[in-house]
Each structure stands twice: as structure tokens, then as C-alpha cells.
Length: 383
Image (cartoon, rainbow, N blue to C red; front, side, top):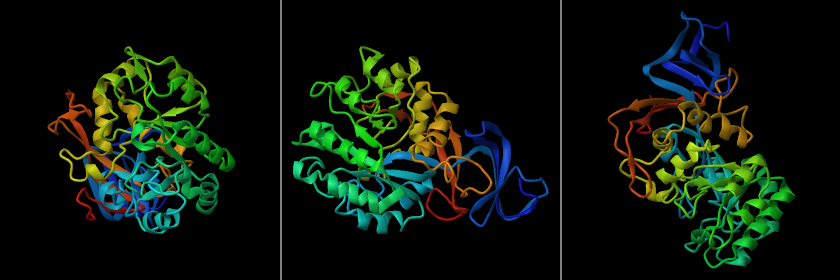
């Protein structure tokens, strides 16, 4: 705690929650020069701007571990400052929007040109998602040397390698070869994979999961049976074995990958996702209701995941996965001032999975986002 009583911005909330420290009490955060200066500063503290949200929960800025931030060059891409930041997400990982051939452009335009903190899971395909064809459609596109060179250039901006072996992304390509080449590049660069499973009837889940390593992340976890982790109402034993060896499991909601029945079956066995992500992309723009991370969190809550686990899965845990613990996912003096304020709306639009199944319950909505000390309202303007 600082002894200073004057800040650029002071944010008070009915609940201030930090999964890293375990706190969940009313409180305030003082911000100066884009950094958190104090958590619960003295009551007499003053600020150039003060925001009071007695009915909201203040969290570290949300982290979306699988989405499609891209200002251009990706058929799935959306502007992160328009589609993520106003809805509470201060950090987002791109799932393969760029490959080696267009990495430099992506870095300059989207990573360096955005207020949102963007990191990359680079596609094993040289083209990323820049063509109309599936990204793994042609074996000649899968270039280990080019991928390794791009990672060398990108350094910490490239977290890992994206390889989605599902039919939709593999197209006519061989998913086994795609995974082999992605693993080769991953081993050469000491990077994890963000992996989409091939449908089990094409390639046994057990064989795919056996190839993954501790720290690799499986996304699209809760697809409807037979394409998800549940079979016959139970989590597949090979999935449990993969988690035991350190493979992580992410939601990756998207247009096809959240089924309430699968999710509830998994949660009933204590198999909650490690991270919650949206797979938000171009088709979600102007959706009604708007698809975003707070609404995805709300669906997990309606299915039975605890609030504490949900908050952890969108703050501390994904920041740890990304190696950003010092920058994101916590409320700590000296860290970048990234905050999300959420209000829970009991009268929000109905919660639906990708098949139109509904569950009762309200919905979290972002009321203010703070990124590096700058306040952003849901309409994208500053508070």
C-alpha cells in the first residue's frame, strides 16, 4: 500500500476480487501513471477522477485465451479495441490468425497498434487464417522452419503454436502430419500448443491426447458428443489421464463448441475447464445478445461452475498460462492498471448454448474496463 493519498484514478466497488490473493471484499484501487498504486488506499485519498460502483464486482482485467483479434488479414479477425476491450477483456490470445508469412504485418498492425494486450498462438500454416481455404488444407503450407523463424522474431509476443486438427480447419490435409509438424516446431522453440482435437471417429482421442505434453492447451472442450470430452455422460478416461499429466483444457465457445449437457456432465465429475474463452470472431460482430467473455462466464455459472473458479479461469489462470503473471490477472501495486467492472443483470437475455438449449440465470455485463489506467465504457468511449 502506498502512503500517497492522491491518484490519477480511484475506483471503488462493492466487491473487489483478486483470485491471486484470495480477497473478496468491498474496496478500492488507486491508479497513477497507468499502474496500480494502491489496493484499498486510505479513506481520505483523493484523485483527479473517482468512479463508484457499489453494485459491481471489480476484477483484474479479463484474459480471453482463445479468440480472433486481428485488424486485417484474417478471415475470422475482429478489431480487439472495438470487440474485446469495451467488454472487459484487456488481454487476448489470437488462435492462429497469422502464420509466418503474415506475422510481421500482424505484429505491427494488431499487436503494436492496439490498446488491448494481444498475444499470438501462431498458426503452423504459413498463411494463418488469411485464405478462404481451411488453414491446414495443403501440406506445403505447413512449414516448420518458417514457423520457428517467426517465433524467433516474435519472442514473447508469440506464446505458442496453434494447430486445429478438426475437419473444419484441416480440410483435405492430414491431421496427423499437421500435429507432428506443429510438435516439431514447438519442441524447437520451447512453446506450447493450442490444439483442437480431430473428431474421434477419424482419429481416436486417446491417440491424439497421448501426443500432447504438459502445458499444451486443448480448446473446444465442450463440443456435443461424440466430438467433445464426454462420452456416455462421463468424462472420457483418456481426457482425465491427459489432465493428470498436465495438459490443460479451455472452453473455446465459438459457434459450435459449448453444449450445456456436456458441460454439466463434466462439472458433475469435478472436471471444470482450466480457462474460459470465447473463440469470438467475425460472425459474432453485432450478435444479439452480444457474444463476449462475460456472457460466456455466465453460461458456465448457470451450468454449475462456481463463481470463484470462473473468476480464476478468466484472470489468474490464463495469465499464468501465458506467462504474464507480472502484467495481468492480479491486483498488485506496481502492475499495469488493468481492471474490469462487471454488473450482474438478472433481466439479461436468455443464456443459450450453440444448439439453442437454454438455462435460467442472469448475466454479467461489463460496465467499465480500465486498461493501463485508461477507462473504457461498453460503447468504446472513455469514462
